[in-house]
Length: 412
Ligand SMILES: [Zn+2]
Image (cartoon, rainbow, N blue to C red; front, side, top):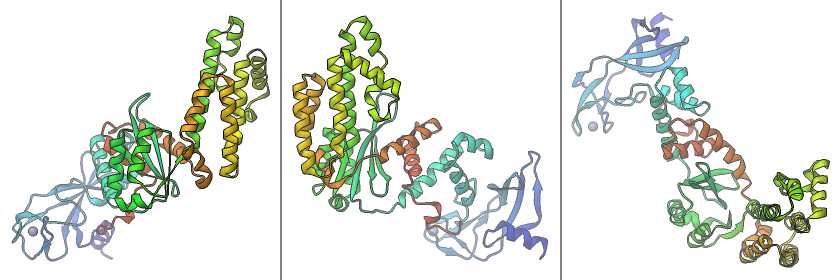
């Protein structure tokens, strides 16, 4: 094999070859490879029409490509303009480089692929590109993959909120609970925005949803009732536990504020001990709780209510669960603990959604793993002032986007 055809093979761009003696090392250490076309005919860059003749030839341009032996590599190409009967004089269209792009399609995909693994700033440093260029390439390919997402029906839908910035600024996340994937994000947790998701989701797919798992949050509920008329609402078990934790913490804080100094010292800093399941506590922590409960009757009552509630989600049928909750709610009312009375009222009000858990057994447990991924993404912060980009990154991190291979575009 001649050296020329060997280089052409290595180049791997169909219809193009390396010019004899066309490889040089630049002062900055990068490699420039001059290439020319080996095929006949051109196509219009606008409409794709095949054309036999050129209008004129453009001055050579350097197009960034894959690194070669550890050096940055550029292809030097002379593009032509064609005179298309439909579009007039325009730059030719090629499948391996987009018009006006400064890098090959395969290199863009390579950079975008690196962005799945590394922060934008690291990719930029690694490849000697500007952060902005990396971010633009990454976003472009994420958008393309997003556009190719299949419209699959979802049987069990999860709706949850995530905080985008500490304390406030919430976004609403939609999950396919069976596939454990994020399928959508909207910027707020308001009813209108949530409704916007369902409108995009489409009537047909809304109708196919059998159950929706979510927090006891009225705007979510209103939206689901309006759009997914066939869906049964299941209140997320983890949120119910959270309300329970809030109740016991309210009792603890109140008791700490009214008790003697000595008792206060004992109660102070025990917050998480009350929240943990007792089977997960160390012996000395159990002793601390017992010591407090021996002198504080209110906390003792609260703790027993909380511990006994564990049996609720262990019930095997809806009937069993209904009977259990009835008794537990009665005890809440008798306890005279204000936070527990409030909690009991809440549970009664939302009981339809709480009991439907026993028919569908779905939770938003998947949200926790996804929230961790989001936290990692937030630390890799370049470009995340762009919310759309941030959302695409989240979709990508949770496997919701089709892979590069699934994009049905030309050879690269
Ligand atoms: Zn044309």
